[in-house]
Amino acid sequence: GSAATTPGFCLTFDHRSPGSLQQLLANVRTELPDYYAPWMDVAANLPHLIEGHQLRREVAKMPLLSTQYLRGHRQLRLARLALGFITMGYVWQGGSRQTVKILPRVLAVPYCTISELLDLPPILVYADCVLANWKKRDPCGPLNVENLDILFSFPGGDSNKGFFLVSLLVEAAAATGIKAIPMIINAILHHDRCSLETALQDVALSICKMREAFKLIHECVNPGAFFRSLRIYLSGWKDSFLMPEGLVYEGVWDSPKQFSGGSAAQSSTLQCFDVLLGIQHRAAQGFSAEYLGCMRDYMPAAHRAFIQTLASGPSLRQFVLATGDAGLRAAFNKCVLALVDLRSYHIQIATKYITIPAGRCRAEQQQLGGCVHEGTSVLSERGTGGTGFMRFLKVVRDTTRKAQLTEQ
Ligand code: HEM
Ligand SMILES: Brc1ccc(-c2csc3nccn23)cc1
Image (cartoon, rainbow, N blue to C red):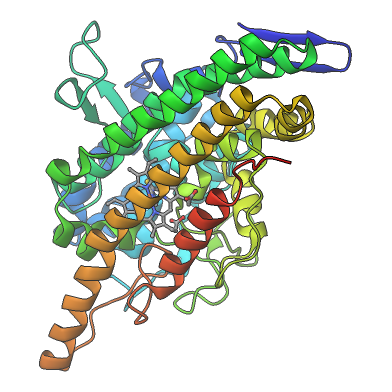
């Protein structure tokens, strides 16, 4: 791997290490030993079982399997992915009206055992359903929408696939920018302005490519399907009015536990670029600064460690300012502005896919007098037409914009 080696400060990419950022691109193994067929069959059939109201019956028939036959990081990630989808389906299959308060032991025991081994919370996270939920149709083919498929899905049809795969492609576009980070740290430690400027240009280009990949969302995700179905399943049970105590993990803990619903604040790449550029997000409308920080506990341990190491390393901002070099300042600001553009584009997407359908849904509600079930994930702002998360997204975008370096 590439490493910035100096006493006391070492940033490495070990392509072999589990959870490395490169793991995103390595083909996830799509099969486990047959012994785990009961999990894989239910997870692979989830939309059908949920729509047919058979999921609970299927889970009741499940044997309590041992996790000892899982070999290595990839199999643990795949087993966790399958159990995560089943768990979310099991809790939310009845919408917000009949939520489940107890996760049966045949799911809870192995799910918590594997989550403990992977140092991840026993709830579906971004690293599961975006980073590990894909396979190439043709293993030798390219990493693009035509040659990719997701492994597991919730009800909501192809919009699931679109949402998860487009997020994956945005992450994949970030890879070159992430790889430039050790070079940036190295260049700072060696006062090498030329290499630093080149590496910053790589980061800016990579973030522009992320925005390009983002455009695929329009042809791959249908707003209505997304808003109505998928987002409920990403909801969590922390500070949730639907599950005020949280979820009982039967056979694991005897009191209910709370865990946050899925959020892309769990994406390590955006948090890496924020830390690299010294962008600190402070409290914003309902989402406190620690919200972004807490979400690091919902990332793979290797990603969390990488961000921590980056945050404790030399400050790029201070270095660029100290040189007083206009070229470096310009290269730095190009990275910041690329991030602002990406977040602005993302806000347009969130408006099209949540705020507008939410408004339409509320109008229907008023006519029908009924009340559509609302999840509790940030993707499904209750009743407020999404002002909560929208303000959060705008504050994060505006904080990014303020991070530009001005002439001292
Ligand atoms: C239909 C498409 C999408 C919708 C409706 C959507 C909606 C949202 C919402 C509501 C939030 C704020 C709450 C939260 O963290 O979950 C959010 C955050 C976020 N989303 Fe998405 N999103 C979409 C696609 C994407 C894609 C493709 C990416 C690419 C990686 C992405 C990256 C992020 C990031 C990084 C955050 C955290 C806030 C930030 O760092 O700016 N989103 N999104
Ligand atoms: Br779990 C889970 C967590 C996050 C996401 C996701 C991918 S892109 C995006 N913006 C907001 C959320 N989000 C999907 C599943």
